[in-house]
Image (cartoon, rainbow, N blue to C red; front, side, top):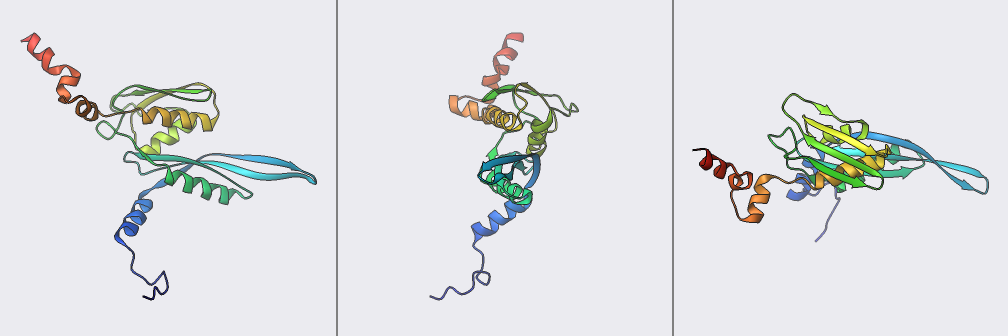
Length: 190
């Protein structure tokens, strides 16, 4: 069977699906840093980039890349971020379900769910993560380091610990109302 030119053969359904998903993703450059390698003749300069990628509907990823030129470093970081996407459950598509803590190295973050209209109250790299995630209302505080890499990793650690009430109820074999204690509280009041 002759395969022919790859550009001429029809795309498979999973290839089309992946291309469609990648088209929906948007990215944000968080930091770019010039790094130097000392060699016999002097210094060789390169660049490292930190990029956040997300679909603004609950999926987000982060990646870093290094190269001699800035555009190449950004491209590598974006590819790395697309491979490391995570899904985060959101309440009403706008905030987190519960408060959560995250750590990475010397970086600690506290993420708190917020009422409608609060906006994104977060600093620097954390703000980029929430914008790409699609969160509209959240209060976040970074404690410890202000290193963008550690702040982003700590934020992703916290987001990885987020879970929806429906998931917890399914694990425990109960209803969501039983988890929140609404059914028992309503019976006691009546």
